Image (cartoon, rainbow, N blue to C red; front, side, top):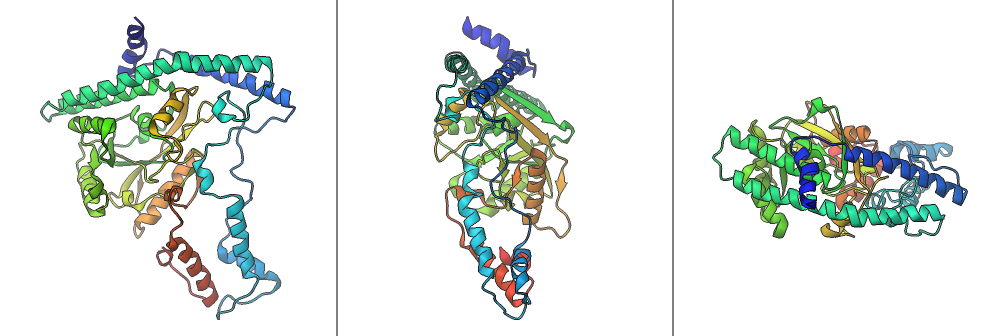
Length: 433
């Protein structure tokens, strides 16, 4: 009886892209509850209201270049920047930058949970939770019961239903001969299963500028916060996924999906061959009947506050890119996946025991590579556009620093930049890479 109700009220509307309004009502009640709790906490602790948008950092940084800042330091003792001259005050610039990096590391803080303006009644976002008032404690306990005893079982059923249908359905569709009918059935199956999974997360997604939705044969790039980014985007259209071949349950899903839709999966040995990867992607883009490729150029998950360096490989395939910006509302749950701290199962459990997943998705106008523009500059231009639209911090650091050390090339770039100032040589951007 319980499963029948779930199918009737959730799965069937998902198949037709309809909503019965339960999620909207749930979100409205949740917003009112969190606002009430925030006021009670502020009164109990006698602290002023916290602004909704927290500052990105405690250090105020300008947009000045190395040369401009060193010239300012030399202002009291002017020396020309040519002729091999060096002044001791130049070292203060590097000391200042070093201390700033220690106090406020731009990279490390992008791989921790986003700071909240107010506690959202989730224990995991307030490890120092203590008694505030009886009413807040009762609401918190009621929330734990609702999330773990009511929402969690329902969400597990929906997620299992969506994944099961995806595996079974794509396997059966894969038997059909290639035709337009097969493509339409495959698209309907994929989008239905993703919508069921989204309902399993109580996802409320706001899509903006849908007229810019990626077209077939194109390349879609987006900032990356969570593995569920795929579910969020695929709720509004089908994409061809790109990724490494996995084993276990993930491998089973990949093998079934590729039977009905031309997803691009690579073996580990192929991933090391950039030319082979680029060729397969170019062949896919050249076929205008295939779904647009979805790529996350950062290569790792960032904590919903910033956009980090886009790998240039995605921008060497085609001349036109469809950028998409994704921004989650942390008030309802932390969507960021810290893969160094949580396994996939632990992360999904955290998602299914959050209040909800609320996010905004902006489809930006297509961007084309300009004459004389290389892949690196094209990638940076697209990254900046995504960061500006999503209200994210635009950083030039490589997300690979999440697990590795700073490359020697980064250090050498700073050394080349400074030495060029001393000897009076103007360096090209390519000389510092």
